[in-house]
Amino acid sequence: MRTHPSVNVGPNEAMLRLDPRAEKRYQQLWLGITRRTWRSIVLVPADPGGSAAEVARCLAAVGKELCEVPVTAIALSSLEYGSTLALAELQQRMEREQEPSARRAALVEVTATTLDRDALESASIPHAIGGELLALSPAARLVIAIPAVISEPLGGAVARHADAVVVCVERGRTRAADVRLTTELIGRERIAGCLLVE
Image 1: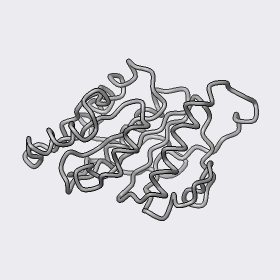
Image 2 (image 1 turned 180 degrees about the vertical axis):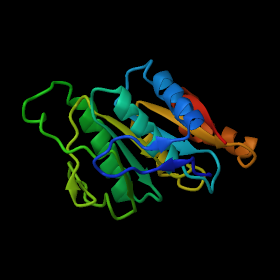
Image 3 (image 1 turned 90 degrees about the vertical axis):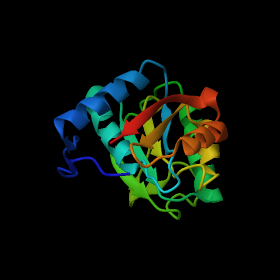
Image 4 (image 1 turned 60 degrees about the horizontal axis):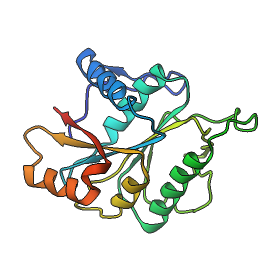
């Protein structure tokens, strides 16, 4: 997928600078998905060669501005059994931990990070990500970009543990047959919506 006009303004600043039109689209997406209760959402490209990583980073940046709890984006370029299991455990832990506690009040926010297949190999939670501890509070929100489930079937296991899934469709590139197959592989009932990426 093409990247959106964005510039990372530094680790201490929360918001990515987006083109005003792109920012409005991510605001609309964020407000649309927050109509339902969720802790983790998965973004999946319908195109087998596509990526939802930039969408995850931009959505998390907008979410961090609009949300009172930490929003973390994780973008995976590939999946293996270990990383799939670790993400599923993280999503399940977030779901189980309903009650806030003082111990969880001190947490490290990771606004957006890209992980390779080895980054989540250890199945223990919390995980070290980029040398920092990712300790999510029960109220935190997790935006996960996975590869297309057509080319990486293990993404279906990550999507199954998410509260919702958004399918990313690239205008002029994604075939209708790939959108249908992605919908079948994930399950129509799991999909909260579709994002058309210019």
